[in-house]
Image (cartoon, rainbow, N blue to C red; front, top):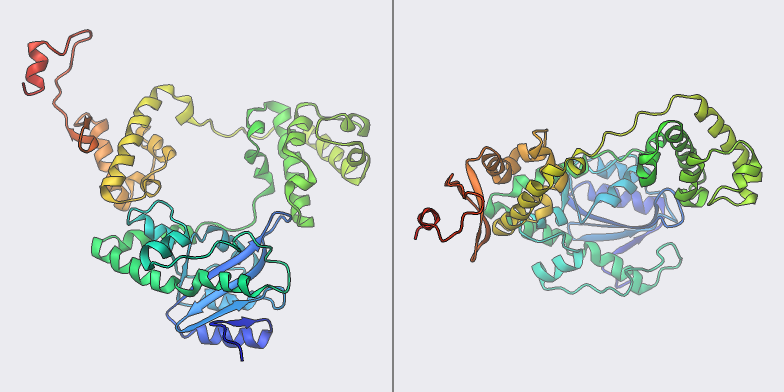
Amino acid sequence: MSTRPYDYVDDPDALHALIESAMGADRYALDTEFHRERSYYPKVALVQLAWGDDMALIDPLAVSIEPLAKLLDGPAVAVMHAAGQDLELLHHVCGTVPSTLFDTQIAAGFLGMRSPSLAALHDRMLGIRLGKQDRLTDWLRRPLAEGQLDYASSDVAHLLEIHDRLVDDLQSRGRLEWARVECEGLRARGYAPRDPEEAWLRIKETRHLGGQARGVAQAVAAWRERRAAASDQPTRYILSELAVVALAQRPPSTTEEMARVRGIDERFARGTHGEALLEVIRDARERPAPVPPKPDRGRANRGLRPAATLVSAWLSQHAADLELDPALLATRAEIEALLRGEPSRLDEGWRAQMAGEPIRHLLDGEAALAFDADHGLVLEERSRRLMAPGEPWSSPRNRGAMGS
C-alpha cells in the first residue's frame, strides 16, 4: 500500500470520484505544472489539488482534465498562488476559470509583502522550508520520480492553512474585502485567445512605422500569430520579430526579394510559407493602413515626468508605511493618468481613500511633499510660503517660515 499523502489520478473513473468529493468542500487548493517553451498554448503536465483532508495529483497526459470544469464552476473558493498563468491554462483546457478566487500572493501584498513566492509564504507564515531541487524539472517526462511528485504536492499541501492565516490577518486589519476585490479583478480578466489583428502591437519596433509599412506589419504579424496557433508552435518558430519588421520596411514582391530580407532564409522564402506570406503582403499594400495606437501621453508629456516621479516616490513610501505592496497601490501609468485628469484606479474604492484623495489634494495645491529625516517623504498641509528665486535660506523671511 502506498504511503504517499496524496492520490495519483490517471484514469477517468478516479478523476470523476475526486471531483465529486471535492465538490462537497467549501474551498480547495489548486496549482498546475506546465510548459510552453516549445508550443503556442501552455502544455499542462500536472494538476495538484487539495481539499479537506484529501490531496491528489492528476496526470493530464493520462486523463483529460476537462471534467474539472464542474469543480471550477462550482461555489467553492479556489485558493491559488500567483494564479495568472494557471488561469490562462485552465481557460484553455477546461474552458472556464474558478467562480471564486483567492490568490495568496495578492492577499499577502495587502500585508506588506512584495509579490512573495510560495516558498517565502511557507517560510514566513508556517516556518516550513519548501525544496527547490525540482523547480525546473521536465514535468512532461514520464514516469515522474517520487521526488518530483513530492515537490509538486508541497505546492498545495499547506495552501489552505496559509489561506486561513491570511484571512485572519486581513480581517484584523480591515483589508479582507480589498483583497477579495483585487482577486476578482484577476479572475475576471479576459483569458480568451489573443486577437491576431493586434499581434503587431506587441512588437515594439512596429509601433513607430508609418503608412503602408504599418499595414504590412499588422498583416504579417497576424499571419504569424494564426500560423503559430494552428501549428501550436511559438510565434518565433514561425517568423522572428526582426523579420516582421524587415518585411514591413521593405515589402518584397517576389520570393527572390523575400530571401534577401533580414531574418528570412531562402528555404522559407521559396517554400509554401513564403508564397502565402507574399500574398498577405500584396493584400496589405492594397488596403488602408491601420490606425496607429494612441501615443503614450505619459511619456510624451515631459512636463508630467517630474510630478509623476515625485508622486511615485511618495506612494512607495506611503505603501511601506501602510504595510502594502506598492505594486498593489498604483502603477506608473495609473499615476500619470490621474495627473492628466483621466480615469484611473486611484479614483476607485480603497485606492481612492488611501492614495487618490491625498494626491488630488497635492494637485489642488492644498498639500505639499516634504522630506522628514525619520519618515522619508511625507505629505503635509501646504504653508503657501514661496521662496523667491535666488533668495538665501538665511533670510529672515525663510527663517520664520522654518519656525526659527
